[in-house]
Image (cartoon, rainbow, N blue to C red; front, side, top):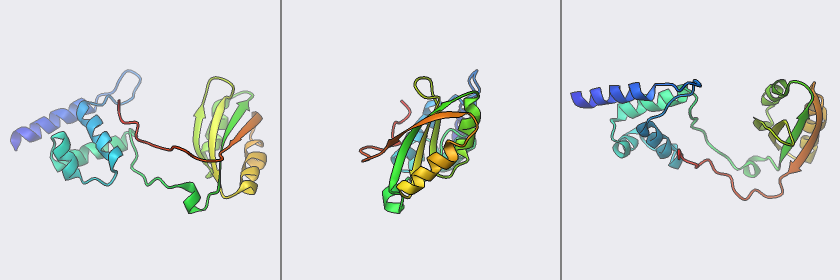
Length: 171
């Protein structure tokens, strides 16, 4: 038991290092824990520990650290259609001036699920989930286009969602 505590402490120290750009450097054990949780976000810590070679307590500490560092989230993913959101769209936004301020404003809108700053045809992409077409129109026309710096938008309305997964692993 003593050697497991020492090994766990040593592994936690390796896990806590940061790279030069400030992002956490993850060791093989943390990556394995993430993969276990991507397969089943409700998997018990004891089962994860058995799979990765740590105690339940060590896994619990690692998971909490990964959550605290913003490395991962454990959430319930829903199908928007089954919970009353009938319209989804990706909106490409061209910005004049500071694209980051527009991206920040988008993140505050409850209908906006995903915001990414890009290089290419658009400065910002935002995924929007709405109840219906009128709701989508209101979000785009009255709120997004009204943001200071928004020069133009182009909407890509989803007709059918064929694949949505968060299982890319840790490669």
